[in-house]
Amino acid sequence: MKRYKLDVKRDVDPNEDGFMLWLPFGWRFYDDLVHVRGYDTMKELREDVKWAIIPCDCDECTQAIADGKGA
Image 1 (cartoon, rainbow, N blue to C red):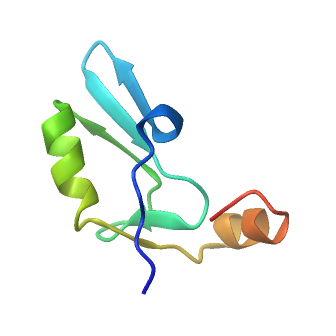
Image 2 (cartoon, rainbow, N blue to C red):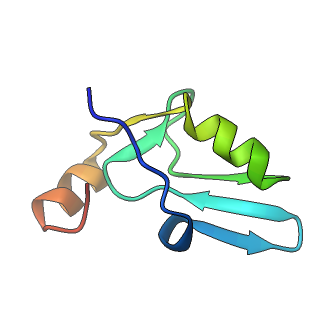
């Protein structure tokens, strides 16, 4: 099974409350069909990346990948 590789410049946006992780097409969080999640610290974000992200085959991701925009 392929694994998500964190690209901080592409996928992480710092904000006043911490950090937002925006997953590219083809990836989602294991516990919900969502592609973005907020974190208080970068350490928390990096820990979550190790186990909480799985491949996604939702309609939006499937179409984006078919159009050449995704994983």
